[in-house]
Image (cartoon, rainbow, N blue to C red; front, side, top):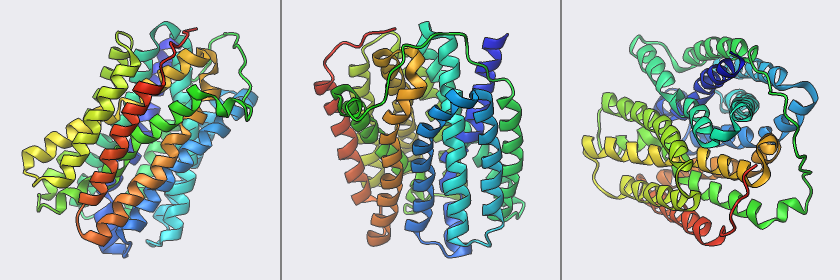
Amino acid sequence: MTKRMNILSSFLSMLCLGGIYAWSVFVPSLKTDYGLSGAQTQLIFGFIIAVFALSMIWAGSLEVKIGAKRVAIISAILFLLGYLIASLSAGKMFWILLGIGILSGIATGFGYLIALTVPVKWFPEKKGLITGLAAGGFGGGAVVVTIIAQSLYGAGVETLKIFMIIGFSFGLVLFLMALFYKNPPIKPNVVTITPRFLKEKSYLILLMAIFCGTFSGLMVIGNLKPMGLVHGLSEQLLASGIILFSVSNFTGRVVWGWLSDLFSNRKLVLLSLGILGLSTFFLGFIPLTPMLYLLLAFSTAFCFGANFVLFAKETAQIFGVANVGKIYPWVFLGYGIAGITGPLVGGFLSDLSGNYQSAALVAAIISISGGLLYFFLLKEKPVSE
């Protein structure tokens, strides 16, 4: 019963926290109704991701001191507080950045770490599949937020009020799910984080590869709706694209997790990052018909989701399941760096050129380079524990 409840709590918590991937649904309103630039909207999204990644390191240390349940409760409180501040911001950049970019970013980091690592500790023999299920909830969160947002927009509700609704409803779910978290009684082989560890080849490769693998996806997530607007696609289709992206992101995490228990991670990383790079390139460089827009949104999201399964599993195999909560946040810093750079580059280059060709080219090169780097440099065979 405890095992099942931890998985259910993890999935539902991830579903709430993963709503940040629907950020592009708010971008047009933030620009037209509140006067934010494209770069400013992407800076907020970038801060969410960067703070999210950095706070996971803090969460890993905090869990050792106060336990998984209390860390998850803090996550719920900060999430509610962050969205409440944003809803009372009157559209001012600073307050939205503080509320959603920083406070909800910390909440996401705290909640994500607990939701990802606790279930894996209960099922060490199925690291890939369990990691995929947990991370899948995060990937599916944008479906819920997009449906809620589009429905409320259709009813004439403004963006700031939507922030308040999300904050209270999701914050409550996060709090209730936090009450069910419990770590299994396992003895860890303690790994000490030292400057020397941070220079190890395997760690550096994981760090660089997850940066390269998430840069493209985050650039697209932050700009998916505006990328479609450039081609004159309808609002309904754009909303469908965001929902499809979320469903594909969720599905990809589960499928790549299942595949990683069957095939070599090196080959899967090369395959997923290669397809991700090509999909991003095509999003920026070919005329987007409705079908092409949906197809490329699907393939981008499906392969983007691989990052959160393959690199988490690799961390567990190299450093041991019991140490995932301590080591993975340091690997996840690569995602944080991608979070602050990917969406910002997309917003900045689109402001300059009026399209997304330059941003798509940069993202595609980075993604494909990450797959090649990982495949050719990480040649040692990980030891599973």
